[in-house]
Amino acid sequence: MNMVMFICAVTSSFSDECKEFIMANIHKTKRLILISLLSAISFVLMFIKFPLPFLPPYLTIDFSDLPALLALFTIGPVGAIAVEVIKNLLNFVVNPADPIGPAANLMAGVSFLITIYFISGRQLKYHLIPAFAAAILVMTVVMSILNYFVLLPLYGMIMNLEDIAANLKVIVSAGIIPFNMIKGLLLSFVFMLIARPLLPILNNRF
Image (cartoon, rainbow, N blue to C red; front, side, top):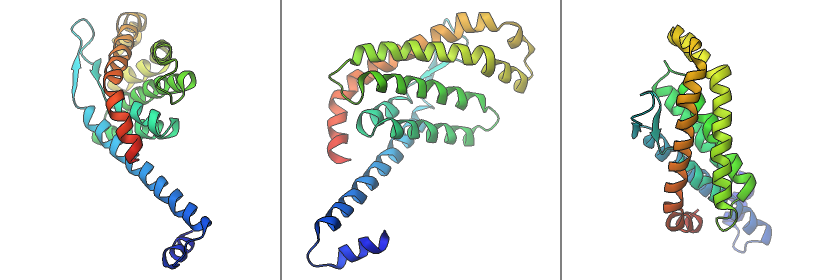
């Protein structure tokens, strides 16, 4: 493929195939640049977080899923999931003592993104509010089930916290469920504020 690109570059008159090949490579490169940029922004946003006063302090709100949402409406679901994966891999590298946090963040983000995509696609004009409402519900259900059966027991085992296993129902009902609903609502609200001005810029440049 590189040889084809070289031949196209040195040929004085490009054929249609050469032009299409070069444009496809430029488009692919721009998409990779955008994924890298959004992943870096997402990783930084993970450190800007705050707890909610009525929930356990380890449940903190951040807006690191916003770049993945922007990727969803510019690149598509594969690019959006790539942003989530890269962000959480970087988070795990920085904090390897807690593998459960990045895993939970990844599962929450992916369930949120995929639900939005299946309902609204990449069109902001169609079914956006129902898509985000369904995404909040799906994310809450998915994370409640995963926390109850997998994530919280593993976290308690790794951190040697026996109280977690004994209070799973209370933690999920009083912590995980309201946390994910509030997080989903805040993400949806902020995204709708920033999407209109930002998405046209990203679509034009990438």
